[in-house]
Structures are given as C-alpha cells and as structure tokens.
Length: 347
View 1 (spheres, rainbow, N blue to C red):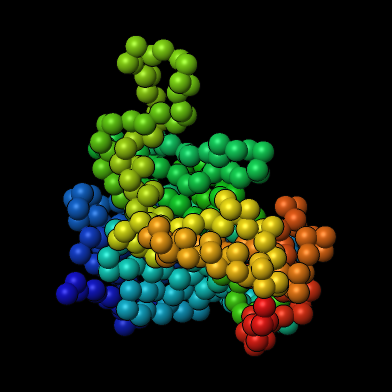
View 2: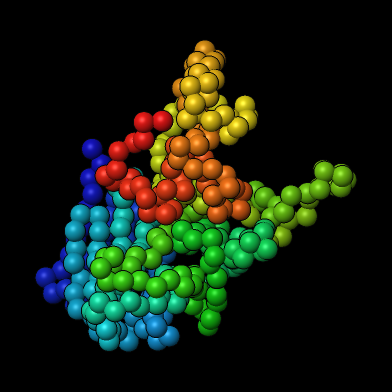
C-alpha cells in the first residue's frame, strides 16, 4: 500500500509543512507553496512566491496583504485560512496519493447573507526560483466562442518543465516581472446560503521534455512539407501533451476499461415517435429490442411525449427541450417537476 505522509509544525506559521507521496514531495511556508520535488525526474522546483487574488464586488483582495488565521493539516490536504473585510478565504492544497501533481482550490465564505458578485479569481500566481528558457501557452483555437488559454507550460534550461492549469477554458495567462499567473472571471452572483463559493481547481506538476515537438496547428492536408515541419518554441513538446492529458484524465469519471456500445436514438429519428401513444411505445420497443440484438446495452432515449410537452413549447435554440430528461425538460424548466421528489409520469 502506498504510504502517504503529512508533516506539520508545532507552531503553524513558524515552520514548514510537507505533503508527500511516492512521486512528489511538496513544501509549504506560511504563505503557500515553496518547492515541488519530483522524485521521478530527480528535479527540485522552487518558488519564491505563491499567492492568489480575488475580486469581489469590485474590490480586490491579495493574499500577501490578507490576515492569516490558520494552517490546518489533514491527510493529503493543507488548508490555509485568511480573513479579509467581509469574507473568510480558504486555500485548499490537495495531493492525491496516486498523482504527480498538486491541486489548489480557493473558497470564499461570505460573512453576511447579502449576495456577492465574484468578479475575478487568480488561482495561480507563482514565481519560479529559476529562470525559464521558454514557455508554451495553449491558446484557444475557437476565439469566436470567447474561450481563452488552457494553461501554461514552463520550460527550464535542464529540459524539465512545469504544467500549470486551472479547470476552466476561459483562462488568461499573464507574466509580470517574473510572476506567472492564471486567472479567469466567473462573473457570478453568489449567496451565502448556497455554501462557500469554490473556484475551479488549479493543478501544477513537473515533466521532462522529450525534444519531440507537436505542431500547435494542424498542417493543411493540401500543403506539401516534403516531410519537414518547422518546429519552434511555440510548438508543444510530446511530454506536455501527456502531462496535460494525465491531469484531465484524473478528473474524468468513469475510467472505462472497455468501450461503450451505444445506439443514438435520433439516428432512427426517434424524436418523431410519440411514446404517449400505444403505437409509439410499440415502435420504440422495437428500437430497444434491435439495439439489444446488436449487442448494445445503452441507448440515447429522445422520443417525444405529447402528455408531457411539445416542441412548440420548447425555449432552447434547437427546439429539443421537450425531449430532454425523459421528456420532462419543459416541466423541469417551469418548476413543475422536481427530480428529487416527484414521481415519474405513467407514460
């Protein structure tokens, strides 16, 4: 069984804390992360600064100026608690025993019941202890969707690197006098009764560059390259692809060991079948039977049901609201059917 270690000091703010598993060891000071030792790489990454910034109701709070209240250790976790006017801010660092990367999440606990507006969150703002040789930023390929950056890859002279991400597709990477940050703008109004506002999770971990680069953009199929593709620091290393994929995979459920065979009902135009009628139910049963006969055990169920709603009542752009949630999409929107307590309709 993999051992998991957490060391803490007797005087919470005076000494350091450590989170450790078989792959990495992380050291923390009274203000956050100070080092990441990657045992796989034999590399010790250091940080002279690790902070966060939160903008609420038009006011920005900086962790370096916030009042530190406590540092609370637990198995695989370290929680920093800060006080700022009107709010308790918590920073939760987590190290899973099976992961090579550290996770970081911000929590906002309002003191008052009045709604607050969460304007901006800077989850990562770090300053590495050594100079970068280069960095690669995976920018959005679909700016028309208003998405931004997807993280940052920090490269060092010894052919190692750090991947820094936040689970949000609207990120902005910024570099300011050696400090590197990832931020996004939730733009959300939040009520204390809904619990603490939790940021999207940030992650950071090490990797070793392979020297094998992947073009940042697909090469047009009609373009002749004669087998030679120009590679620059703007291209991604294969190790960076794998590092990012590993982090994403850790948060994806479930982890399948075999493929799912699935019939997508609308391929049979099942939205034209009204299962509120005996004939419609009989027709859909034939679809289910044939799906099973072909060795599939899943079906995307999207028939219409006149007893529950019609396409004319749908308010979504596709006009499919009446097909969602087993035909209860419209009723759910209207608040006429509660998923927690109301019985399923007979049809």
